[in-house]
Image (tube, rainbow, N blue to C red; front, top):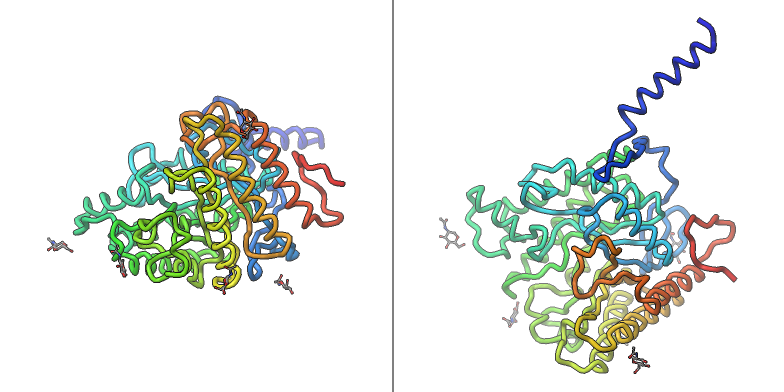
Length: 432
Ligand SMILES: *[C@@H]1O[C@H](CO)[C@@H](O)[C@H](O)[C@H]1NC(C)=O
Ligand SMILES: *[C@@H]1O[C@H](CO)[C@@H](O)[C@H](O)[C@H]1NC(C)=O
Ligand SMILES: *[C@@H]1O[C@H](CO)[C@@H](O)[C@H](O)[C@H]1NC(C)=O
Ligand SMILES: *[C@@H]1O[C@H](CO)[C@@H](O)[C@H](O)[C@H]1NC(C)=O
Ligand SMILES: *[C@@H]1O[C@H](CO)[C@@H](O)[C@H](O)[C@H]1NC(C)=O
């Protein structure tokens, strides 16, 4: 045969291969090319930690985070995911925290223990794949303490159905059947080969960290040792399977009983009776960084705005100081939220709250200290309003908040900008 014929045949074969392997239609009916070949993915390094701060593993450059939460990504359409990443990136943000779980029911990611919904798994594949293309890293949370999307209560029901004698939701942290379910789930997630990129989750640099649980709490104060043992066992389990990624707990950050000199920083007496303790829980050797949330408005609803601000200021100081001097690990404010509903000048107040946290973390970054960043709870786009809550916002509709977020990204970035590094697409900061 002639050369031309070979070439034509080659193209035909390639076309057929592409058609069957790499092109798929999404839920929106649009065609997307999937090239599940790891080395064809955009170049990206891992983030790890060095002492009290995060670093680019490749060259040790410090990393301080400005980011956001959009818990709903796997439940929404592909183009909505891309749009959210595009907007996050346009505000200079680098990390997004989202749910890598949805437990129970035919529409859950995990339908029942060990049974997965492939359609939803592919949605998670896309979130991770698209994050990398958008130069965003993800904090992936593995289970909920609350009932939304199944949570620990779903695990308890599964265990009951399997014949385990479990009654309290606290048994989530100790029952062998439930621990087994959770470990299996983790294994399945870590070993998943992404259908869009061909990269296993445990090898994916676009994953910033694994989070054990969203806001672990116990029903009984006396379950505290169970929670502590669970954290140690599960963090060690993840590390045994995945040495590349960081692990955090997902705590709200309350100080437990026995921290007499610190309980004053808690939002109320109730906070020390939930079985968690910021210092002990975060101290485990397999926990790479501490996690804290901040909801002054929900935690002390009756206080005046000035009192809330004062409370928050103290809350941030305590956690940064404890992370710097006691834990000697970075601390990430994984959720910072402020209620807007029913408030006359809510946006203005929210900006004060957000700015306070941002300013303190910027000061920490300037000194190379443990206050490693904050993630606002939570950002939306117009099309995903079904997932809104009283804290959510479409940032572009709140220009002052939008600018605050952007400024924080840009000033953090300026501190550690490296010479000669090419700037990625969508980079919004103007460099001097
Ligand atoms: C960690 O940071 C210290 C001090 O900033 C530096 O001397 C050391 O080389 C860093 N280690 C790594 C592995 O980057
Ligand atoms: C189930 O556990 C409870 C408390 O742990 C115990 O009192 C009860 O006897 C157990 N029931 C069975 C059937 O084992
Ligand atoms: C919680 O448990 C601790 C000991 O683990 C105890 O000292 C404290 O009194 C308990 N608090 C409540 C409210 O039960
Ligand atoms: C910071 O923590 C250290 C160690 O616990 C403590 O000695 C120091 O007083 C704390 N500083 C502030 C300002 O709270
Ligand atoms: C909100 O409050 C601030 C400070 O009191 C004031 O300057 C601003 O004009 C108020 N904004 C609105 C929309 O009421």
